[in-house]
Image (cartoon, rainbow, N blue to C red; front, side, top):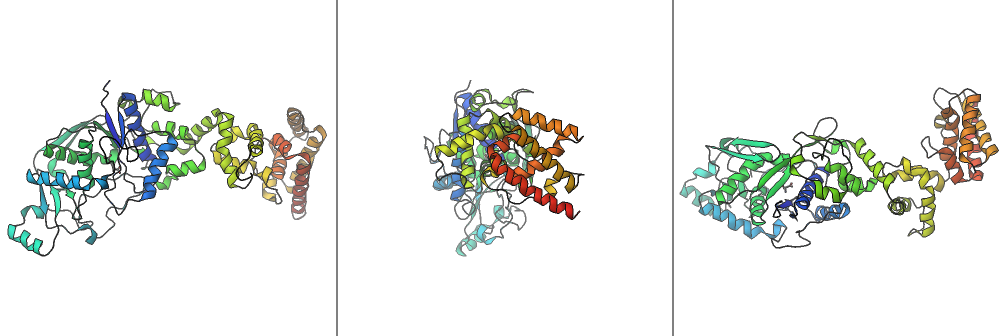
Length: 507
Ligand code: GLU
């Protein structure tokens, strides 16, 4: 095993962490762990206008939530710091000058400074990781090498007029650039098809992504670059920069795309994709981690469940797929449900409590009695939870009174208000008769009653379910009535009965 593997996750702090970004972070993290190497977090904030502190905080929060720690980062420091690009600006300028001195880059006095160029050319949605600008002219059309050919007099004239140059990489117009991607295989590009002399240093002195990324990967001794496939077009360019410096490039592994179920690239359109949103809804970090790692990686054809510790051991580049991965919300829900079912009771109660608190159903802060109450409800709700937030609609009927019932919900499909009224009466009579001590006995008696009147048990129970819980989706009915108590349940049945009677007279 190569113990010297060094990989990095290099996000630009421009938006909340989303599925694609986290997938890249996890693959890097697991790769480093499986190799006994180092996982570096480097913040690429050279586009200052789009970077913001909340986004940086969100990176830290996401890592913490997932339980992954970088070996070197802006927070932990390390021997290759600083790990924030805006703190390394002088360095990029020095390296740009080195390339100019070597004849591999040049000052271009023809390009319009960025802040004078129209904005909008680089707008991106917050899911796609798109390559940043290669042309400082914004929307004003492709660069046509004008800056290469400016006469010394013309340069002097522009200098005198206060034009601040950009620095451009000199791309040879012949030959080709080729690399062996560890996932995709050989990738070749004719140099003349690459972006024309991309900018390395902008006129405001800030580097572009390309320069900063290559310089840092080199200085931080990164051995493997694992990043999203969107960056493939930039890689030949990066290789030319390595070559211009005389540096050995790292290995590259571009990760498969993540698509929505409709086959288009995963984006906001497909629903929430930011990790903070998944977290809010009540997905568990271990479920998210497990599911995201399977987006483009598989251990074998069948195994689906992995703990973090297992992934730290089992992950390998060889098992990364070329084919796009499909992000399926239903599958994620299923995963999360499985994890919720396995969770130790104490932890589940702890995880659910904030949702109860937010509804005002507990003391603030929640007390032992609140937790015990919730714990007693677990048998009723556990199997029905896909996300932690599902607890709220499931137990609302116990914490808030139900005073209104919609006739539409009370009346099963294809039945009349009169039918529903009769069924409600019958079902309730069974409950009153048998009592709630023996739940199985009540269930059995209800089933027998349905058979007797030759209707489906679902029909018989629906009006009662809606009467008790105010909703047609609820935890198991008998257990729900038991939790609510006969007294309160009786009142609700009477209230619902009145609604059905009114509906029956207007039929
Ligand atoms: N800062 C880039 C991003 O936002 C890094 C891409 C790379 O890994 O080279 O994704």
